[in-house]
Image (tube, rainbow, N blue to C red; front, top):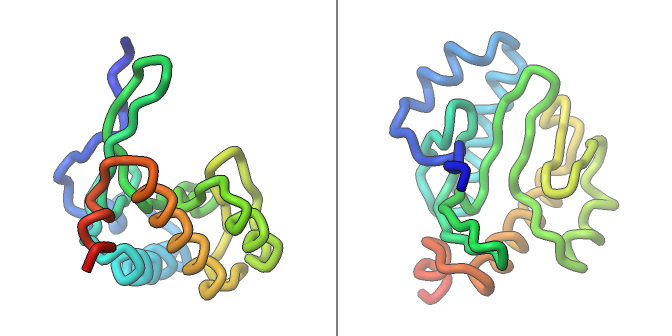
Length: 148
């Protein structure tokens, strides 16, 4: 079975952003996203794989037998767009997307050119919904925090 590439690396977040992100607006957006996702997840940022900044963690296992660990919320400041890994496919999340702003989407990733293109209050609601979904369906770091 293939090894999961997205694993916690222990690399320094600031070094990654300063070395990897060459666009000043994307750098500023990355630091703002770190502040927002840290607050919403109540978790410190950590590097996952070579280019993903993640918050919290959970363990997943698919019917196929594939399993691993992943961040509860995450993003990557890629060249083309900020890639947000914050979406869970729920009825509430689908409704929230209509008010998010200017973005593109794949199955589970939200792509934005600039943070200013989206409504961060709606992004917060999407993140909270995702944390709730993950805590209900997986063994995760977020479950402990939600019980207080």
